[in-house]
Amino acid sequence: MTDSTAPPSLKTPDMIVEGLRAHGFVRLDAAALKSLLDDEADARWKSFGALWNDLGQDRYMADGGRYRRRRYAAFSHADGQLTRKPHQPHFQSRDYNPLNGDVQRWFDPVLVEAEDHPVTRALLALCAAIFSAADTATPAPRWGIEFHQFRIETTPDHVGRPTPEGLHRDGVDWVFVMLLCRRNVRDGMTMIGAPDGTRLGSFLLSDPGDAVLLDDHRILHGVTEIHAIDPALPAYRDVLVITFERE
Image (tube, rainbow, N blue to C red; front, side, top):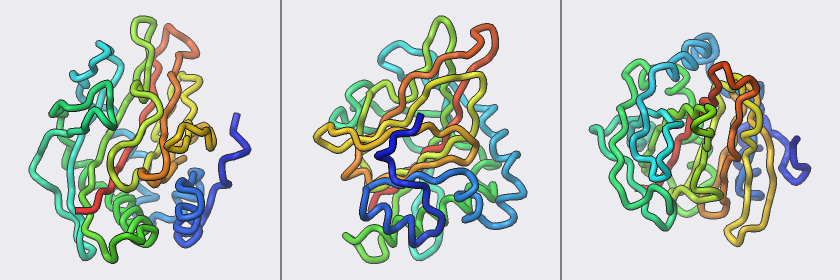
């Protein structure tokens, strides 16, 4: 069920920028997002989702969970140019991630096939343009970008928890989250809140390409547990998270 407090899905970059400034978050349905990508990205969409079938185990879950797979990469973006950084650990302080913070987490690197994929390039360019326009603090910012491929699995032994830390900030400036696949799962509601904990909205990313963009300074976000519809079959939720931080 979708919360009526969530703003409607927007369809143009200018509308998205205005929505981010007004509300701090914008959700996009799959059709709206795909309309903002180029023809090559649209033609290669299915092969992009297939890249989530080769993710390594997240070995850093302080809750002991074995329900999360991921790959990770860091980029810089300046003057319209995107550069991949040497592979590095992902780090968050406990101020932002009380479960897994204050640890250098070395995840498997994003594969070259994913880095060079037309969908990756189109999404990074789109996000850079939107966040640069919405960000009034720094004209023409240089961005540090982190690119996270996640698969959250749910089994009878390990319930899938997309955000085990609960409602949280990521400790960056802007966040983009996009669904790639929901297989044999129910629940997994995206929850949106203010820094004081006030609930601002909730909605389900249900179709491949459904997405939400967030001002990380103004918005807390989280996702409820996922559960298998049929416990005898594989059940998982694939998402892409891209964060942008001024360098």
